[in-house]
Image (cartoon, rainbow, N blue to C red):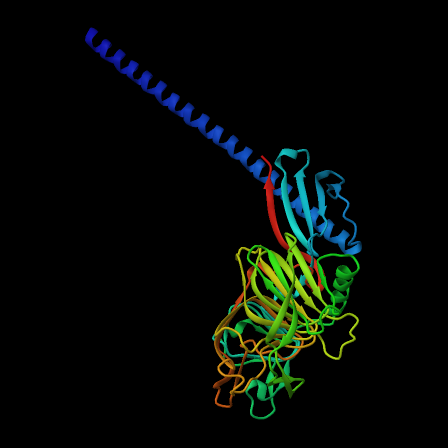
Length: 473
């Protein structure tokens, strides 16, 4: 009987120990669960507070947009408190405006927002406010265009019709629903074609008709730049009185520019250009025979511009951000001013810190005697004329230059008149008989929202290049 009692007591003791262990484990688990719930609750409140702070900061940007739309010159900072429908405080934001500088027309706006009194859990968002630059497009034409290259990089727009035989990777838009296709677009007879048509790929990206782009806005911009250069001393001003034939600009990789006075051009050469639906004959030369060095100009960093009242020839390696304008204002000469690309034009780097804008009141042309494989980096804009290469026939004065192997463009091409994106002329059998046999276009992604300095803009001002900059802890 005694042995049984001891065994029973041992069993009871074991049960007690197991119960205590179980209760301890249960207590630990319960405590952990409670702690986890509390931590999750705190984390949820933290996330919710940060999200509210973000929305408050965005509200600040929306207020800034409203204020800029009503007074684009008011750059005064502001601090505002948001309230709900019952008048309770939601949060506050602080706005900071950075005025445009260095030829950039965009305004930088920073909004720092926080929820109620959680000032340490702020969110900061920034945006650029301004009008879209013409450089938003890889190709922008006021007249129709024919793309026969295999691939077309970047956005394309024409206020006329587009024949698209290349595969695109971005939007292709036309301002017309249909147009009359002529021989310059490969139509044997005048045919009615859709605003965008052809054998190109990714046709789901074709859209027409859309709102046209106003090229006339460039006129006012050039007048402003002329005043800025001549009267206010900004950038480099090159007067028409110094040289009747024009200037040559040789960009150097150290950020300087050799400025030459063009003394004489080579012997005249016959060539033709398609102007307003007709062939126009020319007998002159676009190649320099002799030039005199006038000065070595150091480009201002981070951006600068050069305004010439006469024709300009361009070549070299560009360091920094610069825009070159060739325009006479008011116009007194019989012909508008052209920019001629006489050799390779390349950037010293491709991180966005180097960009060249070329704006001609007349045309942007490729000279006859250029390298067999030509590279042109920059934004090429012809306000009233074309961007292209004239039609040179084979002959003693033009061989072998009338036909070149390849051209590569990196940037954007913009023109009022008819322009061939491939810089070539073909016969009825589609054989290249003048210009460049092959062409490659590459859109510079850095210029979509960061155009060359003082470059023309179009449309209505709005936000662009939005990003979050900082988060409080």
